[in-house]
Image (tube, rainbow, N blue to C red; front, side):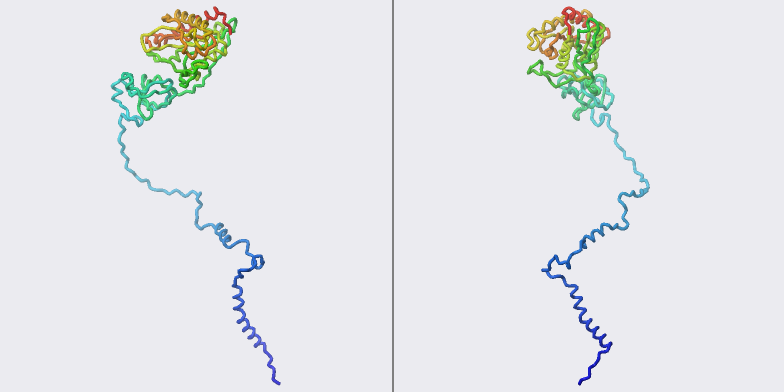
Amino acid sequence: MNKRIRPTPQLLLVAVLLALCIVLPFALLACDTQPPEDTDPSDSSFDTPEESTSDVFSESYTDTEPEDTQDSETESEPTETEPVETEPVETEPVPDNIIHGFEVDLEMEKALGFDFEIRDEQMMAHGNVWLRTEPSTQKGDASKVEILYSKTEIRRIGYSEKWSRVVYKGRVCYVSSSYLVEYAPQNDKTDIYYEGKGKNKDIVIVIDAGHQLFAMNDTEPNGPGSDEMKVKVTSGTVGVATGIWEYQLNLDVALLLRDLLLDEGYSVVMIRETNNVTISNVERAEIANRYRAAAFVRIHANSSANANTKGALTICQTPNNPYNADIYKECRGLSKNVIDEFCRATGFENDGVWENDTMTGINWCRVPTTIVEMGYMSNASEDKAMATEEFRNNAAKGIFAGVVKYVQANHVFG
């Protein structure tokens, strides 16, 4: 019988250590092994974490403030620098004939007797007028550049009482100073009614001071249903000697006539009482029609290419007018009374009644109408006379007498 050897604690410890040395490497190798490709992704033992390593990295990077980074909105301390001395730059003097950057023929201006006051301002034309190459009309058509139409804005760089130096489309031109005004809105009141009193209260007289500050170059029918178109209204003529505009002369007399009629108890409608209005010839006639005027008096002054032409006249339609021949007799009677009394009061030559069917302001009327042409502003002597206070008072008195004579004789009531 063999003798059994009993293991001692020392031997058991050695055996365990040897076993660990053999098994441990294989266990570590098994931990690094990836799951096989056919592993079921639903197997809970291979669930992935909710945040990937890339997300964690990104969040960590975003939340991390870079070191020593200054806020872009933080104002930095200004850096003080030593002032640098620079040599002054010498500029060549601007020649006298360069005005506001435009070359001007000063010798030509001087030869024509003009020494313009230098200006730089925006102006507006209030009538159609020719722009010219020089401040003179001596060369006639040869100096014409282009028509400057009413309500056109233009830059003025030189002024004299008669002519203005302007810049148009980059070119220096000249235009009559009387045609340039500072811009003003044309929205003043029209159709102004004054109620009369007493026995004449029901007689309505409509007064039209012809023209206005700014022309209206668009067109309107010459009569109801007409295919012929005419400009709505112009600025009128201008005094050859005084430079006074017709629209202002007409208004001065119209206002005096208004007061005379109101003093006698007549009701009065004024088409306009200022120059800054926008109202066409058709619109003026329609106002008179609406009030059923006993008389529609349109106050004007005349002009002619012949400087010697003179005298006063009134205008009405012909008996064959295609629009209102049925009121020819009334218009003729009003016109005859007015011109006779006007010339008696002013001493102007009586050229009678001119019958004409081209006047828009007559053709649209359904009430007795006359145009009073007080005299010729193209005639120096008549122009100067019409500029006086005496003439204007006498003109108003003469027109008043003619209107009253007509309405009282015909018993025309509104």
